[in-house]
Amino acid sequence: MSWMDDLLSKLSGQQPAPPPINHAVFGRIWAGQRPKTDAWHWQMLDPIHHPRGEVTATWRAGREGPSQAQIAFWQWLCSHIDEVVEQSRELLAIDVAEWTEKPVPADIWQELTWKSADLPIDGDRNSDWEVSFATPTCPDVLLAVVHEQGRPLYIRVDD
Image (cartoon, rainbow, N blue to C red; front, side, top):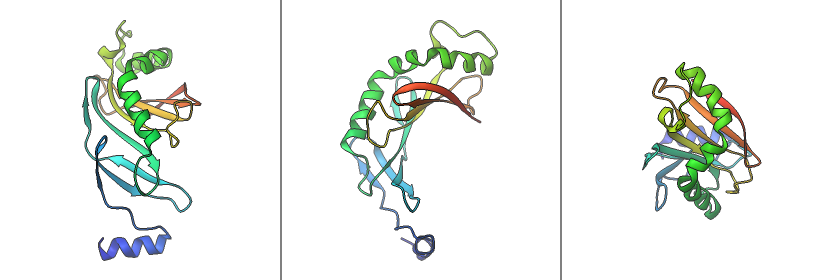
């Protein structure tokens, strides 16, 4: 750790960040920040190659990295992303049509690329989490499907 990072962590009352980890499931991961009363905010440094896109994940966890429940959730999500999108179709269709300025095709994946996921802190599908998608028409805009208590509740547009 550099002297500047050490100084800043002492001034902010935070612990120094744990070193980057080469994780067996997530690849290279890093905890970039930790609010004083919260868990570390971890992120994947390199996207995975998934048939639905180049995908990264973020999550809150302890100093040691993701929990077994978060790993299991990530593996489930990667295997079931089509089901997640189908459950969110009505919500997604509104924003996809608005951003692409054309009707949503029967296969919504023609207009979506999976970009990221924010995993639940407890790794439980019935908790709060989100998945984000881009459209080919507006690749710099992310449509985040926000799940609360495991159900798709609304779309947050990040542009």
